[in-house]
Length: 256
Length: 305
Ligand SMILES: Nc1ncnc2c1ncn2[C@@H]1O[C@H](COP(=O)(O)OP(=O)(O)OP(=O)(O)O)[C@@H](O)[C@H]1O
Ligand SMILES: [Mg+2]
Image 1 (cartoon, protein in one colour):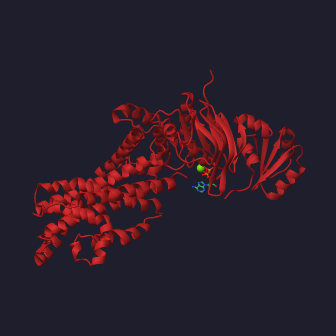
Image 2 (cartoon, rainbow over the protein chains, first blue to last red; image 1 turned 45 degrees about the vertical axis):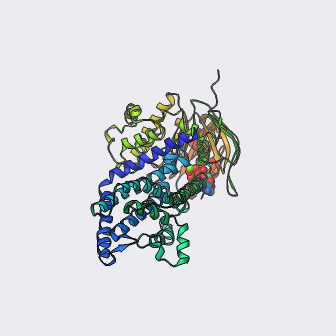
């Protein structure tokens, strides 16, 4: 009963966001396609000439798989920080929505689903560009799509915790600088984790992006996917914890 | 058979951290009535409305709406209530019509089921020709009217309006008054807050005058006027010393001052008028006592903030 209500409410919030996105689809798709195109062409080809192979695959493939995972993280994070904050506080969208039967948990669930949807849209564009550039090895790469959705949920939930506390947009700089950007650097997007100092190698195992990359890369490169349960488990655990904590915090903030 | 009370509060209390902003108040709202909450800034009006909607947990006492206890019944109450909040909360990313369709979806109402109703609603608030306008292009009055239309999307039994006409021009205000009166005639229960005593006098069957989280007075506007103020009032304006003299000489009246104006409350204005006629340079306004006089008497004349 309560679950069904939450699902219905979440879908209505998701649809609201999707309708806004459809309005601005043109420019945002341009960015979705343009950015990975530049990255993969510039870095993948350019650096690839010097590097050749990395971890047994062409550097372009290595980089494309890393970028797929990290952009799912970035897309969901940005949406859950900046856009959700805008709807929650200055734009008063939440005040309007919460005057209807929807409860906080319905709205949070809808937001997370929407953030993940944006990760999926953005990731699909990257996958397409990567395939066109010859970086994708085989159809199993399509399994990346549901994975991008899960990665989106995971990072959206974590970012929403920040949003629940934010008093302004500047606050998000801390999260980006102290959490998201370091992950982008050390979690295996640009080079294998095995080339990190040993202490750091064990440390990055607790970071969600490490596990996202570990799943995406073999699917794109066509190799065997190992430790699936572990990697999925970490992502799901972060997703559940993030969404639950964020929901409690947003409730504490708004239900006063 | 007597119809059930719509809202029932007993000892209703609200605290934010250590400050109590609603102090154990009791009130009942009967179906089909229009009830106004009046009170200076910070009196606790919005807080009470938020508790009624299950948007704010209650700190003490009991509160039930449609016979169900809050805040547990929040979902149910909001499904059957329409809300116009103090600040506009329209969705700036959408047009007038889209705002209504999107809002309907939050109530689980599908597009096909509400299309007819939405067209009736934008007719009702006279926005039919602005259906495709974006929110930032609407005037304040249009936004308020759209907020009212949006609040009616779920055909609510109770409509809660927090300062529905604040900041609007007289035309827009009159238009909203007449729409609210239409709703009353249609048997809806209305709960509103306002700082305009004229508005309360026109629209409300009952008012609750509050201050500092307490109800100071309640009843029908006319009954309150009768209870608290003399039937006639003379407002004196002019140079302070002129007023001073006039007031000193005045007999059989109660005098109050706010700023440069003196208010003489009396049961017999004739004698006073004769006296004031004798004083050149003194301007005065003769009018019946009204709800604003009650409000100022009951809540005091000091500035808030
Ligand atoms: N979230 C909050 N935290 C702390 N205090 C609050 C909070 N919301 C309201 N208050 C305080 O509670 C009191 C009542 O506020 P409320 O908004 O209910 O007043 P109001 O009667 O609606 O005033 P106004 O006419 O200005 O809208 C005020 O003193 C206000 O400062
Ligand atoms: Mg208020």
